[in-house]
Image (cartoon, rainbow, N blue to C red):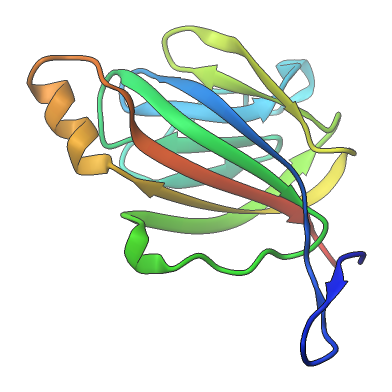
Length: 165
């Protein structure tokens, strides 16, 4: 692991990249999935499970949103090691899972639009750990039930780092 040395001599993880993406949420759902889904055993939205905040499949991460139809703001971070945990009180939801990437290139997928133009590179294919946080769920739900579509009201932080055996 690269990174910097902390006060007590421990190697601390460092962010490699940070990207801000838009996720088109439809039917409370969006996914981060291999850019080319041709090799996936279960491509999005097959076997999507309503009500599960973060659900991992090979090459795919499903997110259940608080709002039915809106654009969520997603910050993706790629780290060289496990990032420090966020303050849980600042987030409505949080979860962690595994992610297996065949290509190292991931796209945002929408329930209604399919693969969108939003793509990011992990840096390499392989096994990754993912931690996801979300805030603004109640606001997104209220907008969906009221006036309709919100933009950036629901916010996600999704952190990837290489899985260690």
